[in-house]
Image (tube, helix red, strand yellow):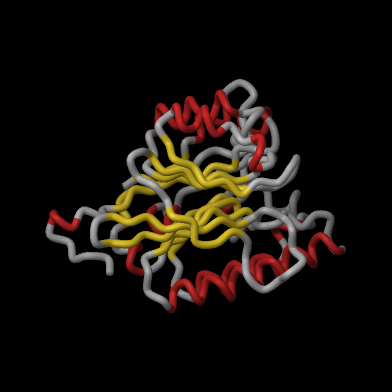
Length: 271
């Protein structure tokens, strides 16, 4: 099974690029971030015509996440929005479950706050949201359902994950507090799929503009985190970086994994 994450930076404005990528890459599940539209104005008909069932958690002009499943698979929504706050109206988290015969697979699309400028209220909100994610992620591991958290985490985990750490040292994605939250999340048992299979490779998923992309001055901020039950099934983890070079492209590229979930091939069931 191929599962991808893609910050589309506006699903309506980038719809041709998204449809091209869905046609070429054929992910079984795609987790989208920054759709930047309300549920009433999402391009549902175009996504259905492309062969995907979609769940949307939109917000006009800002944020927004979605989950797509290639037909005939259908995702059952479990949660929209993180627990832990009654007044957070930003659309940044969508969680669903897919039934694969006797197996259950849970997937979440995550768009963590950017946090700039820092210090300030936006950075405080970022850290508070991260704390809520850490708390919820721990509960996901406790119930034992195989889970994948996919999205734009707005953190550069280490200096190896950015082309020039000195130039960006004051950015919210680089701050020690942000990185400490990321490490606490991983310490629960989540596996960073890209880094697990490419421990010594410079991998980027975001470039601020076309010039930065052409000289590969990038950041790694889009990740897929696997629960232990899925980590043992990980076979590939790649970035479709060529998408960043297309006309009117998102500033992010899709990142994806393939998981061996074929129980007929001698592997035990996930649950």
